[in-house]
Image (cartoon, rainbow, N blue to C red):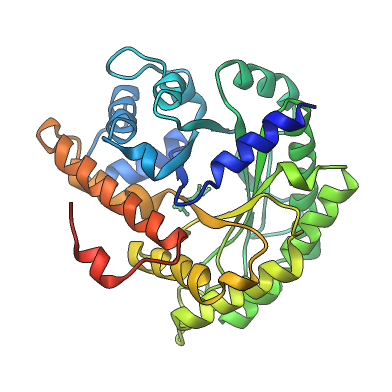
Amino acid sequence: MDKKLMAATAAGMVATGKGLLAADESSATVAKRFAGVNVENTESNRRTYRDMLFTTPDIGKYISGVILFDETIKQQSLGGVAFPKLLEDQGIIPGIKVDGGAKDLPAHPGELVTEGLDNLRGRLADYFKLGARFAKWRAVITIGKDMPSWGCVEANAHALARYSALCQEANIVPIIEPEVLIDGDHTIERCFEVTEATLRATFQACYSQRVSAEHMILKASMVISGKGCPVQASEAQVAEMTVTALRRSVPAALPGVVFLSGGQSDEKSAAHLSLMNSAHKSQLPWPLTYSYSRALHAAALKAWSGKQENWKAAQQVFAHRARMCSLASQGKYSAAEEKKVA
Ligand code: 13P
C-alpha cells in the first residue's frame, strides 16, 4: 500500500476552496438528464457535454477532482487528448465510479443493495493505469414504512467496506457514499436517526475490513426533511443536525467529508454547506466540501441544451456554480455572491 500517494490524493481532493465534480452519471442516468433538455443520448453527445465541462476556463481553481464514468475515462476530448490527461494538465485529479449500481435487495421489498464487487480488483488495477487516483461507490438507503431495515443497512455497509479495502490495496482512495435518499415525507429528525445509524454501521464495517480511515473520503448526504414533508427544516437546522450526525459517527482521522446534492436546489445545497463551514467551523475535525452532480452542472446542461452556439454561455454558468460551491466550502456563500454573474 502506497500510503504516501493516497494521503496526497485525499489531501488534494479536499484542498481549501475546492471540491469534486461528479460527472459519473451512467449512460442510463445521462439519458434522463439529456431528455429534460431534448438532447439525444449518444456517445458523441455525452463526450461533447463532458468536454464542455472539463474545458471550462480556470475550472481547476474550484474543482480538485472529477468522478468519471467507465466510458468517459476511456474517451478522448474533442481536441484528441485522453480525458484523464486533460484533467491532470489542469491540476485536477481523475477519479472513477466503480460500483455496478443499486439493485433490488432480495427479501427486502423497496430496498436496494449496490453490486459490483466481482472482478473489482482487476478493474481497479486497470483504472489506476488509466490515471484514476480515487474511486466512488454509492449505496442507497431509503426511508419509508419499516425502512431502512437492518439487513439493508448492513449489506450496503459491508459492500462499501469490501470495496474500500480493495481500493486501498490498489493505491486508490475510496469515496464511500451511503446516500440516505431525500424522497419521502419523513421529518428531519427521522433523517437524522437513519443517517447516524447508517454512518455508524458503515464505519464499523470499514473497521472490520481493516480499511485505513486516514486514506478514505466520506461522501455524505445532508440531514434534511424528506421532499414531501409538510414542515421543511430551516437552513440553520440542516447545518446543525448534519454536523451533529457526522461528529457522532465519522472518525476524526478521515482526511475529509464531501457532500452530494441529492435533489436539493443549487442555492440550498450551497447555503447549507456554507453554514456548516461558518456557524460550525470550530466543531469540524475534517474539511467539509462538495461532490455535487446536479447542483454543479444541471444549470450548465440546460444552458448548453446540445447547441454549439451555447457552449460559452454554458461554461460561464458552470464556472459560476463552481465558484458558489467554492465559497460555500469556505463558509463565504451569500445571496449577494449568487447574483454576481461572471
Ligand atoms: P447529486 O449531487 O446530483 O446528488 O449527485 C451526486 C452523486 O454523485 C450521486 O452519486
